[in-house]
Image 1 (cartoon, rainbow, N blue to C red):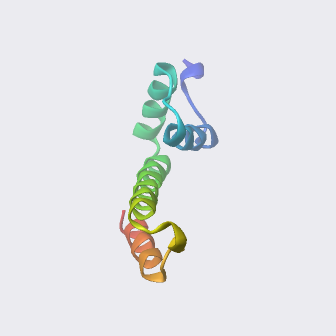
Image 2 (cartoon, rainbow, N blue to C red):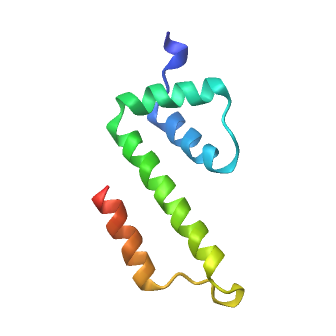
Length: 84
């Protein structure tokens, strides 16, 4: 059973890996088990997804020559992170 348990460090690595490529079924299961028990990693996962969505939306909408995140957008991201 120990092979199923992840450390928080391993969980956060899988959370970030999931943003780049699909996880294996075993990785998904191990991550789900960990995040269902660990409030900190669960919150980290939600915040990571929120940041990824915001950046994806911003890069899609912003013209190529103005891809500097405005301070108002930074504040909105920070507020969303704090409220989740």
